[in-house]
Length: 357
Image 1: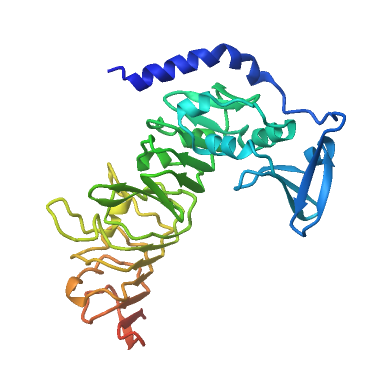
Image 2: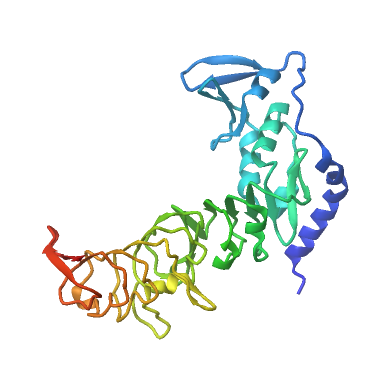
């Protein structure tokens, strides 16, 4: 069903389409001097310099997180403040489609426009179709490769992120994302607006029922997940390089109850064909919840497990039985079913440390 919002977006797109068509082919702003055009730059050592367009352009590295023009020269970092730049920087980073389509270069200096292009000129904005930043405005367009993808609203086509090679993903409040969208991609960083929350390399969604783990950056080799109430099935499936993982609970939810509760640690790596825990994952730490019978089914490559602090009453005696290649287990309680022979010693915390012989 066509919604009022989609009608508005279509109208805005049409209004800008003709004006933006030729802008896609404009070159990166040239370093041409304009008489009297100077910029005051404050460097990280406190020095103030007057920069011409040429001198500033030659040291340009984009826009700072505070929305200033960022320069680098001879190992020093400098910033040129410009009042109109911050709002446009924020719009290009996380604005709605309507805000993006209304963007213009009014009151932004030539150097400011060059800085914004440097920062966002290789990005793609996706809202059911592709948009790009060119010539001071957002227009329909395509890029074979992208530094970052801004998911403005709706969802991404499967394998879209992997195809464009983006290393950064930005999500607005109107975005919809599933773990499968990140599979095979090179994404290293996820930035998101509420109701999403990006903490470390992981993405969460705040819902009426609690905070939900949605996904994590596929390039991550180490993850320490923040507290959450439950997790999407396969939330970490795209994380094929993981070597170390700290999780607030094993399975699908912190409570460990409910008819749909799944207690297997590999729930986080579930796919349509079963569990796909990466062979690179060697170290696992669980800081809360309970460990059900055969909790680590599908985790045969894991070598070190730390469950210090868990209630021994909530750990099944055969919770670790499927750890075929385990080397060290740090756990409260004794008498667990473990593969192979081992020795034990008492840890300062009161737990027992099992070391495979």
